[in-house]
Image 1 (cartoon, rainbow, N blue to C red):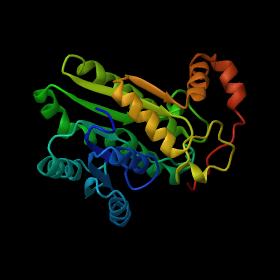
Image 2: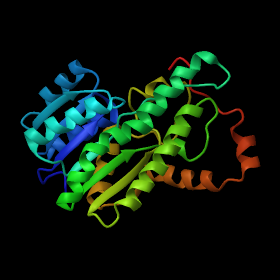
Image 3: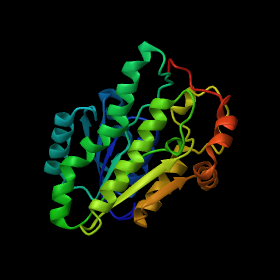
Length: 258
């Protein structure tokens, strides 16, 4: 389903960053859009800028299964069953296991980045299976390839997301439903704007959205962007543990307050 074919697209985390960029990308192609986020004012702002695209907004937290089921039902009632569902909502926090005050952050990151994907996809899997087609897209991260110091919650949650999506892809292999795992490197969003260190291969959000849309159209299973980060990611995955430990022991870390 191409961006210019009037696709029916449901996107979480759509109030900023990559989710907003994906919404704009598909709106330009005349898509019917369901946009989900926690911030009603930001969703309203974005929806107004996407005219004449058909847009519905749903204020919900992906950690809340009931709220996500209600958002899914409202979207289907208004626009029909989506062709593409993008589980994009995510949070990043600097965390250290030794600090008791970081324990709630671990739960928030896992509940959003992992369980949030489950809550997003769950209402659509059975109807898509019955229809015999659909695409489920989960936004993971290159950070899930190895454990990054100071970002244990984020790296672990994205590693879990990668494995969750892989399991789902195999489970649905003969159903007509495609499952795509997307692993961005650094994308210029409000989330990465708080990083106090150099971000190699930093990618504009609109370019990232276009890259992801092409991967969706090609029904890819796994997509890393931008391409130089795919090379770096492949090297990271095979780097021997003693070498990785020495190289990353003093790597810059995300502040625990963000």
